Length: 113
Image (cartoon, rainbow, N blue to C red; front, side):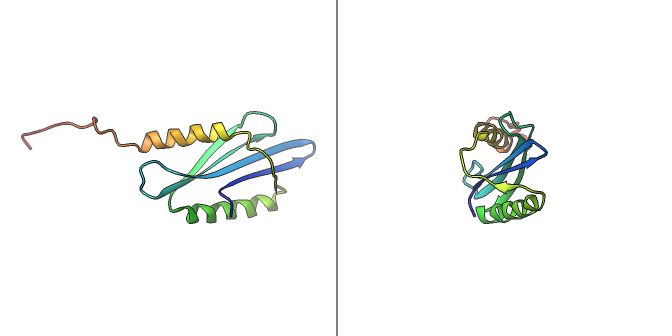
């Protein structure tokens, strides 16, 4: 199973697109996330969602496979070609990593305890 996937659907002249990527989270803890961006083809994504964290890429790949199968039933097909929303997905990954990041200066020192 690939770690990135592009799915498209043409329904009554409306071209929709979903791009999904499985990426490791920062921190070297073996945690991974699945990030999907969706919207109209040739436009900015209207939705970006993340699932996880998952312990290892195989768990995330299993979820991506299940999502792919479900979307295939709705008329989506895998498409080859460049990912056009990679920067949006990268920005979401940075946001997730910043939320999870430890801030070593964020503590209160209480010597009396």
